[in-house]
Amino acid sequence: MSDKLKPTRFPVAVDAALREAGWQPGRWDIKLAEHWADTLRAYESPAGHRHTVSPAAVEAWAEFGGLRITAPGPGRQTAPPVVLVEPLAGLHMARTLADLGRALETEVAPLGVEGDDQAVLAIDAAGRVYSVDHTGDWYLGPDVETALTGLVTGLLPRRLSLP
Image 1 (cartoon, one colour):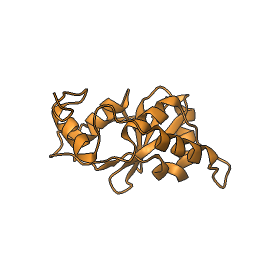
Image 2 (cartoon, helix red, strand yellow):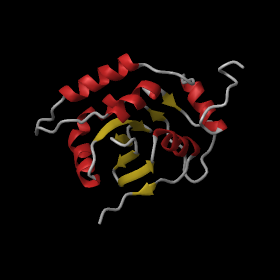
Image 3 (cartoon, rainbow, N blue to C red):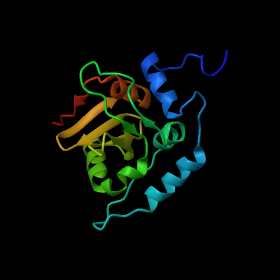
């Protein structure tokens, strides 16, 4: 069976959108992921905020980095955004992501953006994925697969509420 026909861990519509963006099972660009990791670690905001980089982030970047994912149709609950997996899009969000990580008691790294930079996507040390936009912080799922599935199929994310 060719890679084009092999089932993956994604629903059919999500698999199709990922493949259209250039993903395939086994995709792994660790060199690019390590470049992003080095760039993020070297960055310091004018106020002294720095990024953290976890193995979960590097793994997500290696598999999905550089993909611009467009949903194949309308969403179930919301209009699906175009998703760009490009951690350097969140380079200047070091303070915001550090604040989110502190609130969640974990390290958070940039993952990419939704839409026309309408929201920054982030991944924590355990692989959980979040979206940060002007309306607040959103939980997209316990892993990249769940987050991408929700984004591509237009599922309503859960707003983070901290005690």
